[in-house]
Amino acid sequence: MATKQRTENTLQISISQLLADKLLVLGATKKCELQWLHGFFKYTVGICTVIVDTRDPDHASLELQFSVNGKDKIKDISLVATYPPFGGIRWWFLCPHCGKKKTHLYFSFVNPGKIACRQCENLTYRSCQTSHFNDGSFQRLMADSFIDGGIPRKRALKIVRDDSLVVGKMHREANYLGG
Image (cartoon, rainbow, N blue to C red; front, side, top):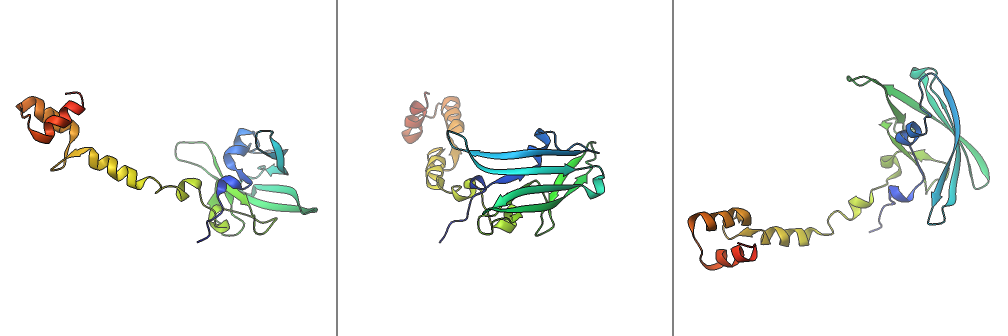
């Protein structure tokens, strides 16, 4: 079975990144150049000019200008503003392919020049691919944390001390836990 590409290995653009760079300011047009760096020596793996237009929150947009295989590309992405009940404004990208509100968009490996959300690009997170790696260890740890009959060790230790019930396995475990 082939593994999916991971989001950590793709070039991406995020709402939080635009906010941190103070590009998402209501009622303004801002322009900057984003650069993706990689490795210890921080070599450039991608450059993109970004123009954010939020003069009209109902028609806000993001324009991405970049090159793929020597050809210049321009992608327009719609921005949507929502207003949480506690005040302020929350910005979202509209995925160009599925039309859903997203906080991250990814540049495609398969189709250079395509930009889409994680689901449309069929990407996954590293944690999803390794999430069950230690399940056996966890189950053994949990099995060792309980005494016969399902009493947690700390509770068993308390029972041993309160009732002076020091017999068999409980006695050894109480000594092991420092009792």
